[in-house]
Length: 118
Image (cartoon, rainbow, N blue to C red):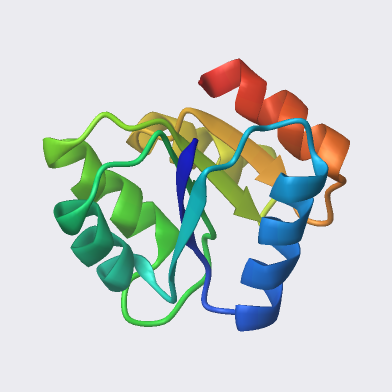
């Protein structure tokens, strides 16, 4: 599986990549982006089977990324964020996200959520 991982924290991107590899998900490659704008640029250059996106980022946040990505692309998007209130989850799903997982998470929870959307 080719994954686009969008999070402004380099440490968090490494943690998520490690969790992906520890899970049962067959990950071929992970392309990283530091904000939603970089994520849109990467999406325009390649094809992915899953997008994992944080909410709170500079330049373009995750919610704006989801809205923009949905204009041209239907790749499954999973929001992965500390924003875990019911209102935020619903807002992300209404914008076009396919799934939502709150931080902190385990590789098992990540795998289960991915298996729901791909």
